[in-house]
Length: 157
Length: 444
Image 1 (cartoon, chains in turn orange, green):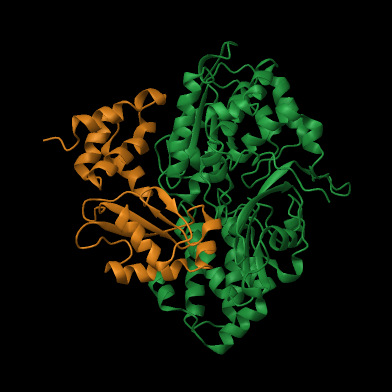
Image 2: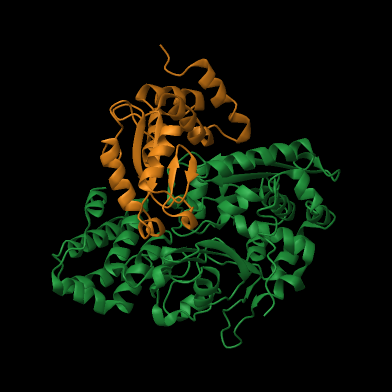
């Protein structure tokens, strides 16, 4: 049984005309699969490789370079929350924010809450330093966070 | 002194600043019309004459870069827009993309006409989800309005602009790392030459330009070279290599100031003015101990170097690497430089792509030395060791392929030189400044 649905395959195929070769669709394809399945499995890598006319090792090589993508041994929760730890945020409490979240969510950094709802990560500079400390929920940035505001934000997203 | 009227940020904070209708009502896309009536080489020469230098960090002449493309090339020629803004402290591209995407798209179209390209890729860091959605909508508006696609503005010019999302890697901001990543590979920077203008994306001639650089192009077309050169700092007649620092610049101010912000000013403003006037002063009534002049990879200004002009030449005169992204991060006098430097080293160690041994090992080694110092187990000779490691990695000593290592080395070199006494005192005291939060982060 194929692990990539026809819908996912069609979304990947829709990227083909944007590039002169299929290899360039590697990152878009990984994003599509990762978003839908919360990880990219070796089987999915193989199927992506077939679609892109690549060797599975080429997809694995690219994927492993970007710390962004998860494998099925540690899949993403429903929401992915990144807390910035780079300089501007560190100077305004970013690390304390992250440490507090590990306690309140009872999850370590990089881990997922027991109910599978929230994956907690550290991020390097999110590019919103004027709003430090800032966090990213999935791919939306939220600035000027406090320990209480982050929890509210996570609940409401 | 009259208040400077912003140009790049002029439309920010307008209602619906991202919409095409409003952009056109404010005179948008007239620069493109003007450019399309000119020969491509004339546009390149205009940008060259303006003295526009790349805003992404390297400060290379944009017009000169364009003119390096091979003549009479059958194509395709590509434009890559570097929207992988990831240098800690930097957020000006994000504001430009979220608030005024058409200003960028017009600059892209003008640049593509000048370099004879029919295909542009915007390499956007994944974390900029809002920028992605705003740009995606703006690009669709352009196709519907005949500003992208076939026969743009009835001139026969054809251009496709595509958005490509990254996956959280700082190295993709290095132009050949960006190209490798776009091609679907790990973002390992290429050995140069060949430079991208000769052999770049998909092995075709390619120009990589920063978002802010392309936004400047739009205004150079509308307002002209004289206008652009009326701002900034002319070349130092005693320095033959100084090409001058012209035009407006977006300065980012963050860290320990009362009003962190992004402000547009003529190139050459002093760090002190940015902090006191635009950033509302150092927070909590404290004083600045150190200031990052242009993203952490440029190093540090000490408290008595705050009158340094932040143009392309200024930071170098006080031992910093350069202007970088003009992102100023203020560090107050209650903060330990050991902690600050550790943060910088940890970032670079995390983001080193691993291709060149001196960078991969050097960044990790420096981070470990600082971990040791921060747990109270440092030795005085660690300070010289840090300097030695930093001094042997990078393009400048000739040991790495790209400049990430130089950017990793510079904060170390500046910190242990300009704040040596503080490092010595810290080590001698044998104390540990690690808070529980930092202890947690040290494990990652």
